[in-house]
Image (cartoon, rainbow, N blue to C red; front, side, top):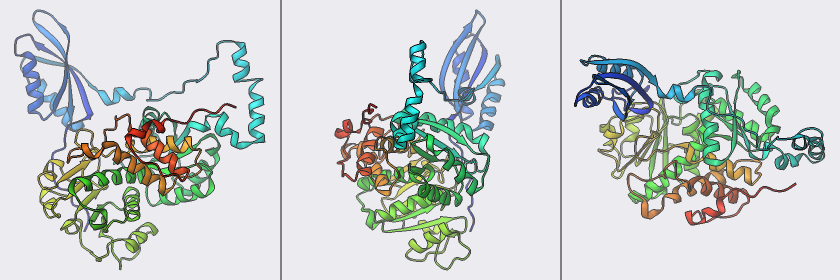
Length: 489
């Protein structure tokens, strides 16, 4: 009962955007011929810039979104076949963005003269060192620890790419660090480890922890990620947060909260099918169970996880013991029949629109595999009441950036020593409430990742949860969500 991939056409996206410099014979229809050719090849033109011209020709930079590298080559080939067109250069805009990396270190203090140097470094810095030696907790006030997170990976489960190793994982970790800064004001730094040994990873992270106020585990394969997180939490006095698990779970719970509001269902009455029982799927299921979901069926390559299965990992055994009340033992498509909600965190193109049609009326589909979801969202929308994906070019994008910057902002401001389930639930509620019930509809169940209210609201909710305080999660209270003022030594 392994996964069966259903053929589909990938959608063009900005992730495969290219700029093609072409020289075309100058006439009234020149630009039109170019854009028409791109469209006929399945590309989407996003910009046309005239670079140069003379009496006989015009040089144009044609920027367009394509579906993948092969599709980009097809678009270029179509242009090359046009009469009077000379393709001069093709630039991959994503690679250009990554040249030299995406983050840097910038000093927060000026070093303009000997006086400033003496206070920032020797001899003045010695007094600060001695103060921290006498009271180690002062490191949270007097060093970058108060606002710095380590983004730790071993490169074993990078996006949908699998085990590509730590060096190849670096562009993702850099991007994560950039998102931390952009949306949460958090200074994060990639820590890519050239080992996939559980004990070694734990030892390394434990050793570097004094420099950081939090640890964000990223793209570490299940089931090792569970043990790594659990053991580090027991060892360290700073929050340890596996974003693939908890960030995803928070965003899914937020989106589901609003989706259920739209379709008029209660979480206690629904049956949810989760495709993918790895790190993300397990965390989602645990959070839904904590919220009192009616029932969940977890599926993976062997089909539905059910009692009576043998040779299970500890994580899968927990799922078997706590889900699938009816004992269903078939495949994913069978599990969907009559289900209220589908949540996919697995592999592309597992389902068709016909499969979605077998779900209960008012069904909710979260097909989150990236870049290609478990079901074509266009087909899913023909049958489901609400459809969400992880893609930025589709409505209802469920993206972890809604959660982790605000979660860490809140934990750092509260000087929290651990991440808790109460923080996860508070963060999910804050994200959901940011939309506002008067704004909810089938195409808007989560706020935009660029909504400036989200991270402050999440941070405020997490700070309150860290202190054991109930916070009315409303956008009007977002002013309370600003980072706490810096303490003076």
